[in-house]
Image (tube, rainbow, N blue to C red; front, top):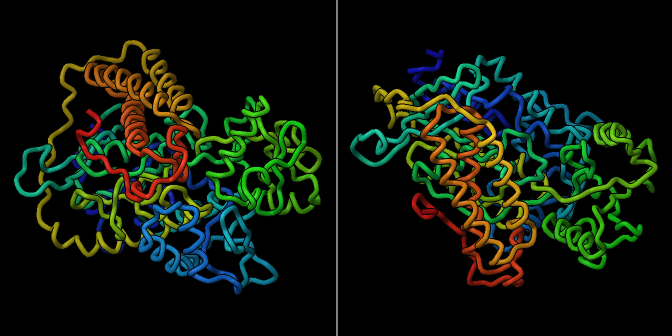
Length: 535
């Protein structure tokens, strides 16, 4: 049997990005912590975050301004208390990251951070490390975890949560642990935990084109839904306006910071077109810019738009965007001499597992933090660079609450039933999984994209339900593989997205419905789904 079988811990953390590692570092002095990552310990969305982390750090900035910018971007659906908590705790969390050794760029002195500006922000408030901020934060967090002896086990894929109702224990339903698939051995361990933390990231891979890494398959959201937790606002998927358009680039992200530093969006004829769509032009929030690019490309029949940085000195571009410059150069594009071809691609999951302001879900002892959660911070559209901020703020808040709740969960942990494979057979045809994976993601891209119609959503729902049934049959007939686990999760997430989108009969933020092109105040509420709502 694999090493994790029968493991018992106080805090089980699924996911090793900024939210999960923040939780682990805060909780480690109060109980045993086990962090599981799907692939290597640094592989996740955090390390790919380019732009930076937003916080009120400049002399001309104020908490109220950051709060207001977030509320405006969220198009009326942000929970103000979640915004206030995140914004006001931000500077302290930045100081904490500095104390761990994060080397943010400085501006004229060791005590003054260089701050940039991104779309939707009224001030320069983005602390960054060139254009590889996430990579540096991930490095520092992993180093701190190593120094404190926090156990991180790689190549572990979450299969399902174990709850008291699932195993027939009396009392209120609560989480008891999780079943986890070892990528190398194929064995499935039952891990008992007093508290389980979903820090599994987003679900961008449910779409054909995404800036997300391959691990972003919505595992935590799907597991929480199947366990009975409430999930909300899955219709709000943020399309990043500018991903590199190149057949070999695999949707490499072109940071919003380029537009913050004066980048101009042009169409195939070289015209700067954003003024036709929004007076804020390139600095409009992401939902507006993504829809504008989509509309302009479709209007002209172009393959892509172009982000023009050629009016800025090459030395400036090399200093501020070395990674983006080098990557574009690899694909034959010199951003100092020619505009960068760009298209929108799915970037961020604004909905997720419903939580309170301490990261608690609707299932006792189950927490969700980071992109897997729906805290109310982002509303109908996330403000740029608020994601890393949310991870570090709510990672700490969830840890504080879990530590406080730990005495209630004391005593012997109930033994979990071993995973029962039944009569499952060895997988026969990988092509079945591959074909369903491709069809699911194409269906989402074609019918549940930047602009939607009720007819397209109905078609998507019909096809995805068939796919989900096929995947379920295959799931129970054959032994689990990581690809099959992820495909099952993506099918659940896809249906959650479609159902939320079908329910919201208006256009707001990231959800643009041609049948109802205006916001409707009757929909100033979350779209909440719980187990059974998809059947």
